[in-house]
Length: 115
Length: 113
Image 1 (cartoon, chains in turn blue, brown):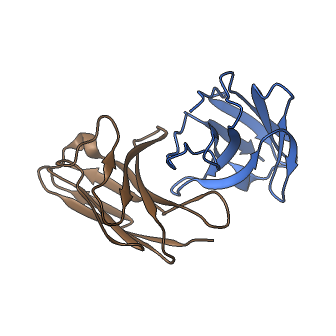
Image 2: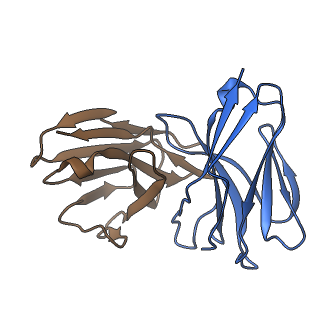
């Protein structure tokens, strides 16, 4: 599984767009990029997955440049309820897992949204 | 998406005792995963549990300390044995969701005193 590097923490204000970048220089050809969100006292929740270019769903957008060595999770118009830890995972098994289904979590990015 | 019921949600235990954590899934799944999240830390995989075979443990985790049962395709237990304060963590189970991603239980917050 490719090693990932994210900022430890970020602060934002309600209504702003937040972009969290993840570096994964050793990403392999067959690897997908996946992001999870973890609220306090809850397990992680799958947000979005992509392979290249741009993916958008009702929660977020994921931007992946052509070299795929990094990715950016974009949260539009955040609210206080978006305060959480965001994890970037890279793996070929889908949804951030290895081909045996394991998820290897890095330290994640703690996003604090302020009023 | 899959729904996981995890019990207990929290417990305070005396050192030297054992606690068994249960996870019930509302659908049949091949693999179930157990994770530990120490205070302020990320998640670490403890083991993978397949029905009908022994669990596969990650480096640093052993069966004597964390025995796992997987009696059928919807249920698994993790026991934390001979507990010490260092075992105070959140323990979570997870399964691959047929609709996408991995679903996690709500976690068991364990405090060992």
